[in-house]
Image (cartoon, rainbow, N blue to C red; front, side):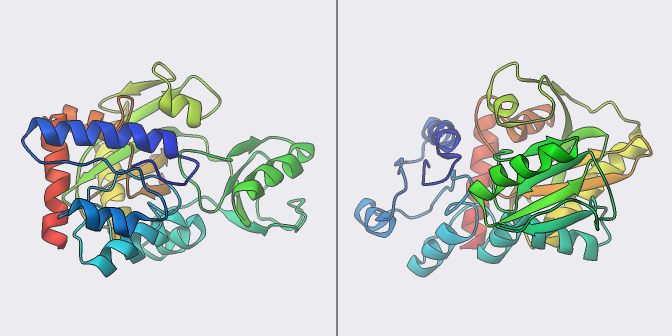
Amino acid sequence: MGGLSAEREVSLRSGAAMAGALRRVGYRTVEIDVNRNLPEILAREGVEVAVNALHGRFGEDGAVQGVLELLGIPYTGSGVMASALAMNKIYARQLFAAAGLAVARAIVVPRGVSCTLADAPFTFPVVVKPSQEGSSVGITIVRSPEQLAPALELAHCHDCEALVEEFISGREIQVGILDDEAIGAIEIVPKNEFYDFEAKYTVGGAEHIIPPRIDDLTLERVLATGKKAHLALGCTGYSRVDLLVHDSGLCYVLEVNTLPGMTATSLLPEIAQAAGIDFEDLVERILATAMRQG
C-alpha cells in the first residue's frame, strides 16, 4: 500500500480497508508502505502472499509485480505484462481496437511537440490525458484552441506522452470483474464536469446508480464489453473497466484498472455489494486469485 505514485494517499486507504477485512476473517496481515527497499521488508516480514493495494506507477504498472515474481511471492491482481499494458493508455487502446472494441479517436503528442488539431480527424471538444496515470490525474476537457496548450503542459507534467482524444458524450459506466467474469455495473453521475480525482475520492462527489439507467440489452452489451476488455489485455483475477456508453448503445472503452480502488467511495466494492458479495468476501476472493496465480 502507499507507494511512490500520485495516487499514494488513495492507496493507503485501499490498503487499510483490505488489511482490516483480512484480519476480520482471520488472516495474519502486515501493512507495508512501499518504498525502494521493498524486497528486504518482504523478507524480514516473512510474507507468503502479497495483497497488492497499490495504485499508479511502480505498483499498478508491472514494476512491483516483477519484483514479486523474482522473489517467488504470489500476488493479487494481473501479471507483469497485463499490468504494464493496462497502465499505458496508448498500447491498451491498440489492443482494445484489435479485439473489436470501440475506442475514441485519438492522437499521441510527445512532450515538447506543439499540437493544433489541424491534422487530427476530429476537432474540439477533446480530452487531454497523460498516457500513464490513474484516478483521472492530469486530465483536462478542452473546449477551445487556446485551452489546448495548457492542458498538454499539465499532462506532460505526469508523462512524456499525452493522448488527445475526441470527446464522447455518454453515460459513464464501470464494470466490475471478479474471477475473470463481469459481476455487475454501476453508472456514475459526477458533480464536477467529469469523474475527476475529487469526484472519485470525496463522499458525495458523484451519484452512484446501480443498476445503470440503460435497457437490459445495453446492459448485457456493457457487461460483455467489460469482460472482453479485461481479457484483451491478458488481465487475470479482478479489475474494473471504465466505459462511456453513447445514446446509440455503442460502448467505448476508456481503460482497464487492474488494481481498482478499495476505499469507502470505491466502485468495485459497491458493484460487488449489489451482486451479493460483501467486502470481506470480496477481499478474500481477491486473495484467492493470488493463490491460483502462485
